[in-house]
Image 1 (tube, one colour):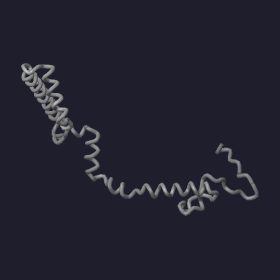
Image 2 (cartoon, helix red, strand yellow):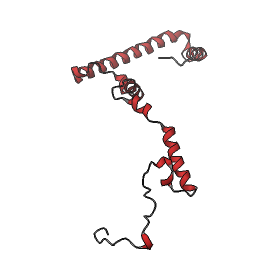
Image 3 (cartoon, helix red, strand yellow):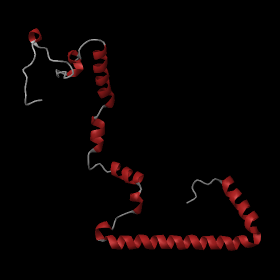
Image 4 (cartoon, helix red, strand yellow):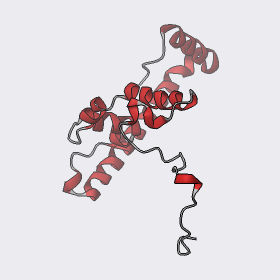
Length: 144
């Protein structure tokens, strides 16, 4: 519960508690705080148990910690039923980015992108099709 409180911070809290409540009332205040914390924990456990019984036997292994998105994702990524590790390992982002960079650089240098080896024989749809002798393509009334 207090994993991130260091020894110096703990001493500071104790000194402040003694100064604020005084040495005579401090044990009673500590008892009251501990009793309140205990009641809150009992109430929390009771509420969790009520929710589990209301959900039914299908959710008997349900953990409330799974509602935390980080815990849920960590648990799902550790479970490799979906094959996510294969997908992640099969995708080479550096290679894909290098291909895109090569295609863009070859277009900027004046060479057509269709001539680059990374295009793999694909047709460049950004270029206008070449027409013989400057002839216009036939007019299609249905297309307009």
